[in-house]
Amino acid sequence: MTVKQAFQEIVNHRNEPSLNWAVNYAEAGLYMEDGSEEQRVQCLYTVGNISRWRGPLAKEVRETLKKGGKYVYGKK
Image (cartoon, rainbow, N blue to C red; front, top):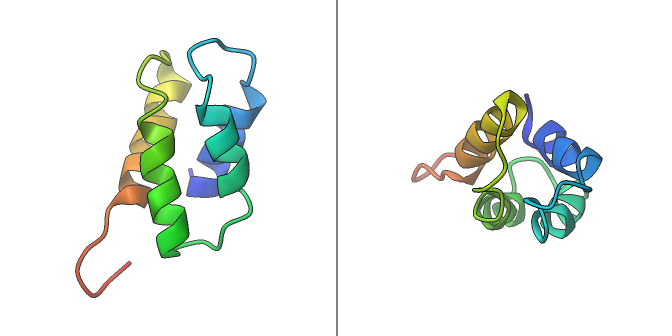
């Protein structure tokens, strides 16, 4: 799953009460350049707002966004 696919899954499940603010962050993330610093920070904001979302899809989305939020010095 890519970061944008993870953002899209959050938007697709917008009616789940556990997602609240994450939907707005995910919608904005869909328009950010892949691998950009802006997208990396958006991953961090979003993953911080889906901690109560449960299920296999939620786990996969969370793992994808955590990877997307990491920064390795000199590499994105």
